[in-house]
Each structure stands twice: as structure tokens, then as C-alpha cells.
Image (cartoon, protein in one colour):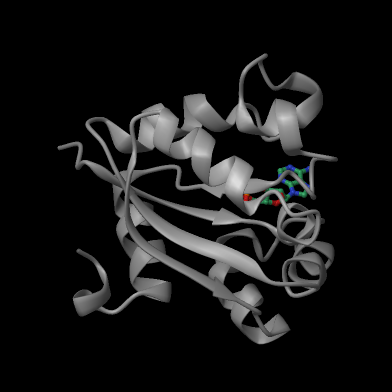
Length: 139
Ligand code: CMP
């Protein structure tokens, strides 16, 4: 059953270029309520844990290095059909394929430095949200 929450991170390229406000505006204008929000500098160990599912992929080491290269903003978001609607709002992983009007079309620089992460399933949304926020921070 679909839940109404998803998880996002604003990635180091976007935080370093002062796009936190612009991206959060697009998220709120897209109809999402911000449930939880924090800015964090991930250690390589924490970034590696977060992306553990990609451990065997060729881009894993670079991804871990990149995701710990500067602060990220983690957030839990709420809306009907949150996971699918948020993936529509952010656009394709590769910004070269991202549709007009999407967050990645506007802010992403490359397939790695692609401005934002969005959960790919309800199950992962819950796991990823719990990775950053305790129960009393999710309201
Ligand atoms: P994200 O949606 O956070 O999930 C995995 C991340 O790996 C992805 O966004 C990109 O930042 C990064 N990545 C780097 N290279 C690739 C690739 N070739 N395919 C998919 N993801 C990649």
C-alpha cells in the first residue's frame, strides 16, 4: 500500500551553490509538506551506509566521496502519492534526460551531482527517513 511520505536529500553541489531555498520552494510549491528537515555533513562512513544498496555499482566509491564532500539537507516530505509524485518533481537521475520544470533540470550538474535524492519506494522512504530522524523528529 502506498504511504504518503517520501525522503529527500539536497546534495552537496546544490547546498554549496546556495540552492537550498530554491529547491525547498519548488518542493513546497509542488504540494509537499516538510515533515522533518536538517543540514548535515556526512562522514564517508555514513554516506557509504546510506548508499549501501549501490555497493556493487561502479560509481559507489565516487558517490560516497561526493556525498561526504560538503553538507547535505535531509528531509521527510508528505503528500498523497509522495514517492511517485516526488520522483516526477525531481526528474530523471541523469539531468540530461530530466524534463523541463523539474528540480534536476533546473539545478543538477551531472548524473552524480544531480542536486537531489528521492526515495524509490515506500519501504526505502521509511528506511531512509529513519536513517536521519528519530521518531520524535517526524511530525
Ligand atoms: P540517487 O537518486 O541519490 O541514487 C544513487 C546516486 O548515485 C544517484 O542519485 C547519483 O547521484 C549517483 N550516480 C552516479 N553515477 C550514476 C549512474 N551511472 N547511474 C545512477 N546513479 C548514479
